[in-house]
Image 1 (tube, helix red, strand yellow):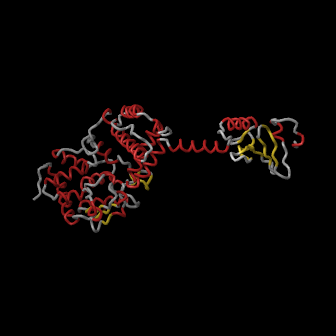
Image 2 (cartoon, one colour):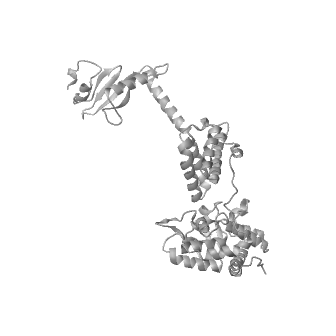
Image 3 (cartoon, rainbow, N blue to C red):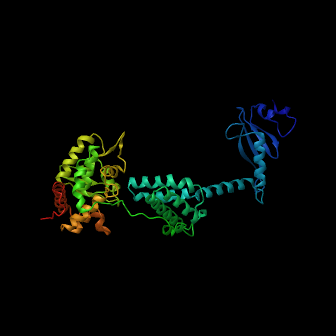
Length: 412
């Protein structure tokens, strides 16, 4: 249909669909300043002619013509014009109103709890290990964002946080609930110190939530240690896990440090393991002396997993380490649930070494408990020679303990 044949306005659907293109682009009035623009290639779109605040006329694109996604029919375009005109300011500026709406939408998006939480995460995760970063954002995405993520953080009441955390508790994940509460409290602290919030709705909630004795560092009594060592050495399910449990008991390292370890970090000929800063809790390199028993275990493990980069590659995904619960689950299978954890071996080592007269500074250095100040930054190999002697004694002590069933062995 040619535009010269148009007889009435607003334009009927049949007219809109059949209007033919011309050699040059043209606009055809529909109603109330709404025009249909037709290009030479036949494409059609809607434009609104309006007067700006300075009195000059201008055009505002509303979208393409049609019934598809992001397109407007005649009726939809007219409705959009009415909405724009109803929402204009005192100066009648449609464009200014549209920009104000967009600004309000952006501001609303930036005021959501998820936006604030991701800002906090981006700032804090720079100092975390990869495992801590993954666990933290995973907990937020799993538990918090589905409930509060899209809401303005200033509008979430303390009572709502209390109900949310109590619902988490009822699922039995007490420790996870405590960690999530701590994260969210820090997230609100960020808003408060940057002037975006005047109070923290999670402040004081811990007084009314359940607590659970910390079991992360559970360890057996001295009388039970010989039996535990024998059970670990005879672990039947996976040889790499059996070796890993023995190394945890012997080296007093954190389970994550061993589980995520790479073969490139070890110099077995020199008897040293250099854990890079990015995998350490305090982001500082840590040098671990390896007793002869550990070197033998690592050579045995190399025959099993040495073809890859990781000491403990995950099943079916050699580029990722085993699950962060692999050692804990192994101890549970051995009957030590709630009595011994991977981290608990560090406490056993600390107790035994201190009770046998070793210098507490040497013990603390082995446990990678970082000293404060400049000395702590540079002294990554503190007391290395003394620790070599100490850890060889400790490995020998565990060997004797495993076969003697006596826990009163003392350093000569």
